[in-house]
Image 1: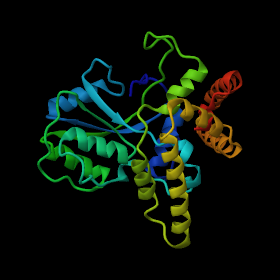
Image 2: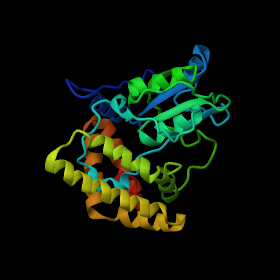
Image 3: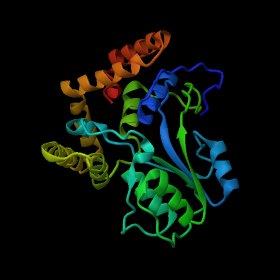
Image 4: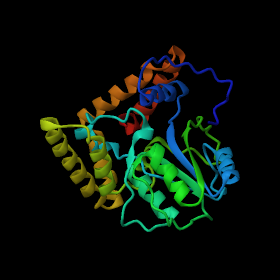
Length: 286
């Protein structure tokens, strides 16, 4: 983290899943946390990667791979079981992926909700087999098969100041466009695999109902990917106006607010209302 280490942060959790405790930590720190895997050719390289976290600069020579879930297309599947611990997400390496670090890192970044970091100048062949399974075991297996070493970390970045990047802060509508796209879109097949992974513990009628919801969500997402950028933005604007989506967004916002201190809630609620009223910023629905 790059949050001031003197910042008081208090969370109250007892016998809850790791994912729930991390959610409370994010709310208290007013940060968007992220599970990440750092991989390097040796221990010295790994320590250098760690020193650059949580936000390596564009000039650092570090490659970052990340694909956020397209939450606008998840509504029908919101009742899917959540990972109790993000390290329990399952990765099965694709047989079609080229056997080098960059392509296998791309495969895991697409199929699971994680961010991968490694040096731009390092892309070894992966000649040994990589184990399938939870990220806590499959990613160390990838590092070892690449002839290197790696470490799972949790990133908790501090809030950027307005002039942090030396650039003018974009207006609300433009900021929403940047936040909503989250960089390169996740592929439809990877989206389907993430949802399928989460539904693996269901059975009977519940499994059938969820399978139908998954298929509908993936179908709608695949259709959206086929649109032009202008058509995508128009479609997203329409989806943001859906009352059900707005209600789910309000519910998520309220849950996060309950985890904050009274002073944090007052400050956050003020910012939330000013953004919502000024530009109908749909970020609150995420």
